[in-house]
Length: 353
Length: 146
Image (cartoon, rainbow over all chains, first blue to last red; front, top):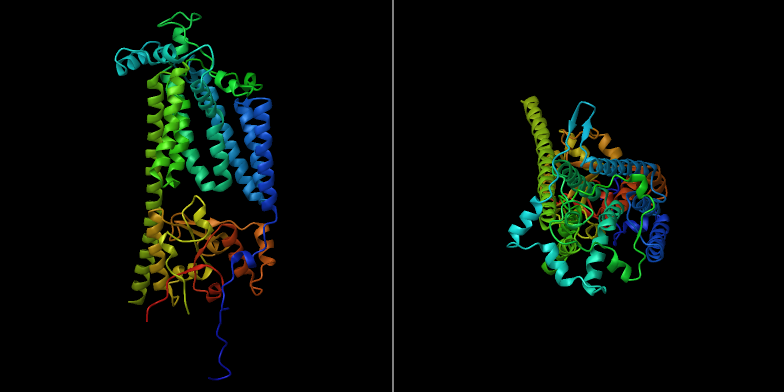
């Protein structure tokens, strides 16, 4: 072998791990510590003060968590986070406004009036009665199970009902931290669900069971229902709700029963996370959650069964739509890449001829 | 020289699998260059491998990524061109600072690729640069059988 030959690259006998050559991100343990501390503080707050359920309080809770999770990240990451937050806020404000305007109708850019559409008082009840052979599920459940003292199923129903206010938000925050790509995928489905929900609130204002049974309203389709969704939760020693900001966004709409967003949100989270679960029994266990939610909603007099079923239908529909769109995007990008490479090859061959 | 093929099948190993995204394959500068340049001696091989990766991307078995600096040098972030399926890993100041402190024999470009691979949990790299063989990474394309 000639000594003037260029030196060949000889790899070391053991390969180096990236962690051993790339400087450690010293802020990673700080972020984890902050997130863990915040979680403890949140649980303490929940125990002492109650569960924050209004949009502003929940948004503030998520914002603090995200600040903990993004300490020391690049300015660009923070910029993306701010854009995401802006989208999130606009989405909720649009939802609140539409929901609030549903029973009075609203003007579209001052050009024309949409709604109000006739209030559905009996139609959903009739569908429920048709599905349950002439029985009203709400009254049947309350007549059989509602007692003066709080029973274990009151606790289950109440706790399940409460998860609506935090469960999807926790899912969003976790996805935000773990993978922005997955957060975007989740938000596409979530925003579509809210959008379709709002559209139905406008087109189909529906009185919930507690309203058509209440003596305060002129309907009284059946005897008065007990309405205390928080009693099982309070029975556990929690204070119930903290609702301080509700006045600031008091666009609540009492006739927004169709579709049930409680039922939809209870399905969207398990359905989204199911893609990473292999065991069938875990999948089945996850699907028990939306079923428990719908049973709780009916028992607590908050929704008709059909509201929940339509909510589930919209949720499944949004997954079908976005799964299809995402597949189409991947296929389109792949085709573009192949076509571009083919064009270049063709030009290359043409030149060489 | 052994190359470590097989992880591009989408079943790869490493920390990336613990995350909720499909495994990422980083298209390194030399690989992007070989795909983009018709005159490159490895062009045919790189294109073949790239088309295989695109087919895996299409069924969401892998995500294709490239360091933004490298992608910019080969047609930018065009979603219509040959690198349409490739997502960029944006290089921030903190990544450049980390690259300066990375022990990679003084090559800043190599160091930057290592930093981005580590921070984004990439365990598979498509490259023609032999220096990557000293790291615990799965390298593509697979070695040619003589």
